[in-house]
Image (cartoon, rainbow, N blue to C red):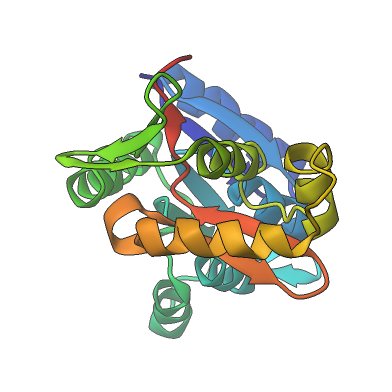
Length: 227
């Protein structure tokens, strides 16, 4: 499977060169030039790795990496910078970057470092959890958990917008609004059921409550066996 990378760099020429160069090495790369949009895309769970420049205009790539890690982004992240002193490298690694590449660099070196981090990630998380509509189960390696129909539908809905909060009202309207006796508190009840059944350590994701926003699935998104 082709690795999908997100390049976050505010210099369009550098970003374009990275996308072209990485495509020649078998990667599918996309570019983003803003830290806030880059963070949202990292939270989507659709990328297998990222390359982040230390300087993003007025924003800091180091703070972007720190924010990404704080909201559950676990993919390998490499930082790029012309700043080669020890303090800057240490700051990037302490923020959660997996490696720090100093400009100028060769693509052979960059790809080699990417491959090392990808192999390490595969060792730590060899595969995502799998959802099966047929028997309403979620599986990872030798662990399988059966879900009720409503639990499964709720998880699938949260998984459709990984990293993006869905309001309690929207969840209720989608899954329970046709039941006249229900109210929005039923959403919290079923969120609790899922949290009890699905440990983050086992399945690689968690369901977070974001105040005044709703509920959000963060981490390594499960995939569907039925696609």
